[in-house]
Image (cartoon, rainbow, N blue to C red; front, side):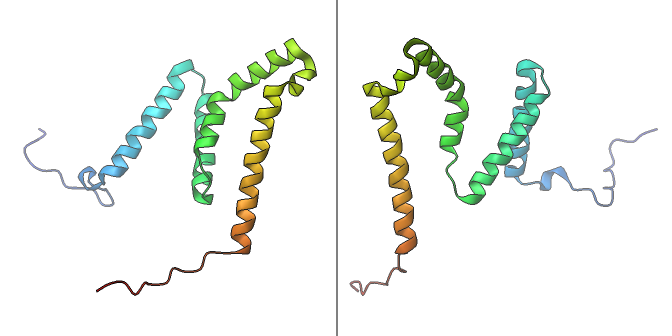
Length: 138
């Protein structure tokens, strides 16, 4: 007969669950819930592959020091922006790109990209020297 009052001997190589840090448990729970939610939303296993692929891309962004927020915004709003672009082209034709608001938005996009490139070029030419310790008041 099985005696449940005695403590079981741990198997060799087994890790007690209590010794796993809280951050690891939290990451595991979030990962499992994301996978379940991804699959159960539409019952397509391809969604899980998409989730894993986007996770790898996000990890690479983090590792390279790139911001992940614009990527996420692009993923979320990309289809809506594409549909709106096609509707505008259907209504106005290619002349849509010559309308004043389109020109202003394209100019802002070009200016922000140009400013970023100029800023990176200046940083490469003139790296910041190490801060000198001040003689501060004592």
